[in-house]
Image (cartoon, rainbow, N blue to C red; front, side, top):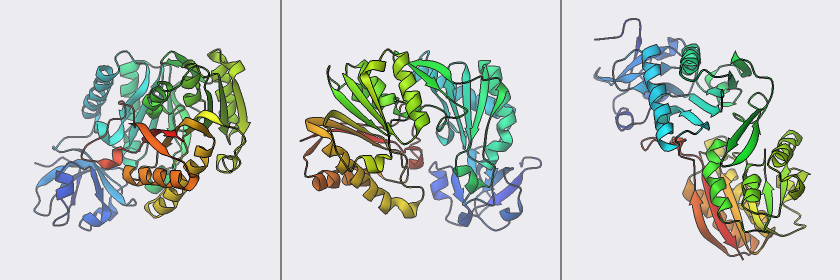
Length: 393
């Protein structure tokens, strides 16, 4: 049985093991020629070299990842299928975070919806599509989200550079309802302003929620904290709520600092902060103070596999310089969101950083993505966030 009107792509001999083991990406060099003429984003049936069905997905002949599998069965990737997958993803979040209105509702391949991210900020949903296949499905996805949540607005935050690899346009716009400005939300007893139309990513780094809570558990009343690459102040705000006497926020973006200042004011912390507009890579080279806790949450330093060695050197140097800002016995809370950097290599860079800074580093806690960003065991690519806290002496 074949699906009417659905093209077929065939795997080369020996190319099916990784896919049968649960991975959902099929690379162009794993396919028999013929798929190159297919229209980007169209559904396809995938068969092995003997013609046995592997699953169904979407194709993009212009991308290195030529096929993204949605299902291992012969199904139509349409409204009924998408409704079931969305409902399953939402039910998992409700089980993990009952009643939570600020979370990631859908996380791509981990939820069986390759290329789709949906973050919830109260009654506003922010959608990211990273593939040509998901782009074709966005009208259906939007209608299903309206059906499920009756949101005030749905924002398409489709300006990530990964879309360029798929040959699809970059844009950011309100796709449903209306949005007059930033959205006020609450998480863990803290109030945040989120700007889905002009902020970074979807507006707030939800993947760091548990890392912020972990940091807060080690903050003591009266601590002074340095929050590097602070964005809208997430780590610093959790530290202030835990009793920190003062937080210095540092970021190269004035808009980010303005948001951090406003979030501090919203929570009654306005008198306990300082703002520094600076290139953090340069700022850390000239230590002028010492802090009880230093937070380092840089952007992804490895954009491609060829950049990994340079990224590891970058993490080493950044962390070495950040350690010098910590008091003896103070803590360093440090992160990496570079998915291409393996956690073991990253930890090695931290050990090298301590040697370079002539400091003793003792790890006291490790973390990663919050549970609303589940990691698919068969796809290590779905795990990207690394977080560690150490004592510096």
